[in-house]
Image (cartoon, rainbow, N blue to C red):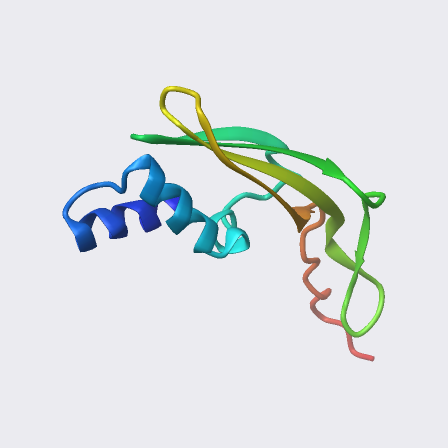
Length: 122
């Protein structure tokens, strides 16, 4: 998501933002929107290389991993937990521009849908 936003800025202003502009623009951008594609249960840490910038994140659970609740009753197909993620945005040289903490839900599908038994006459 962040790569898309930086590419959009490049199209808007004809170049990637400088480090000074990037810090201001990244600080104004909603952090949760930048990392919505990251599921911390699947990928607890990682790095995205965005040309002039690198985004690195580390996540840890803040609640136990548990079965989700199904609707209208029972358990869902997913296991879920709340994670706290620390995100660093740095220049390619390694100079850190900003660090942000956010909370997000991690999830993993652990069950398949069971089809009803055919021929049931009840």
